[in-house]
Length: 557
Image (cartoon, rainbow, N blue to C red):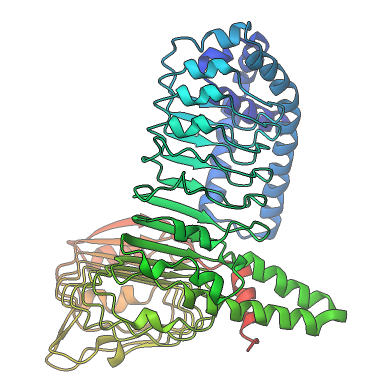
């Protein structure tokens, strides 16, 4: 097994390296030739691991075995890196080496040196790679500096320095007129970014998460015309570089702010000044729930300080509500995404006027008990509500005139879709095209719209997955052509043959290969002779640790 894992790691290294570098190491070619004998076994192992990952394996014994297998792989990778990268480092940093000679006049577009743990620098001659588009030095954990010649890479679009020991970027980085993305995640020693503001108008993605010593984003790097497409802004607990840095930018396009658990209060959140950024069309806000899970674990296990730890957790959860309240965006917003928000209530500004809002995504907000009233969002086309286990009822949705896509998943406490779901009016969901109900284990009732009212006239795709208590549907979905169901759903034998879906063309059966119900597809085919049946795999989106966290936080005020 160890040999198989080793072969996988070496083959991965071989795949990552440009041929020009690999050709310099004859010893690596010889090992590669020997390892080809194991390709058949390796292919099988890869298939097993990919299948396990795809199925999100939950069995403890199997998960433990996979974890140990990965640990062995990492240990071997470290040993290989130590010898391999020492040789590569010597060749790359020696200007007379034949390894660096290929850098002159080459058409190389991707240079991937990820994981070279002993590589400290690259030679000046890297500036000769005029056609280089991607330079990846991620996890080169000894890497400390880039040469000034990096500024000659006029075609460079992506620079990845994540998890390196670099302390500063050369000013010449600002000469890279095509540079779009800089990844500095977990560059713990990075203290400053270049001040020069020459040609970085194309820069749209700057990742600075966990850069503990970075104190600010220079005004020269972020001029008003910059970041027109995407800015990833990751906050760090120990860094002085906070939300106030965003106030320097005249942002346009998409802004994603991660690790909001590191914002201490409403005032810090307000410093971002999102409410004045009229050029932002999309905003994503995310917390790291693992932070709160660790606090929960602390107060659960350390009985001698239980009271203090519990109060600390309660305070942290309350701060999250203040922070979200302070991050109100401009009314021009068209997309809003909120992930892993640990507060109990959404801010009032979510119910205020956002006349241009087209998409809303709320996910993994485990403690929220009520949803904002959004009936005034007349341009809303997509609404996704996922992993909101404390929500017991839905807001009025049926009268949203532009709603085309509605995704509801893991709403564990919702028991009924009744009159409040449809709202008052001549019809309901007039333009809805795609409706998904997934993992709603307590949903028992889905009522008809009021008599004489037409509902779902344009709905063409309906997903009903893991709604195990739901026994009855509305009487008609006139336009539904594609239906997704779990193979053990009683709806298969009740609603389908009764004329509920007169336009049905395809039924997608989740997990229909389940040996416990081998006859379901056959019965379905007999009753729906004109309908095509297809299989697909579906799994529960809620994990055990999520459910445990939900149970524990439900006890908190």
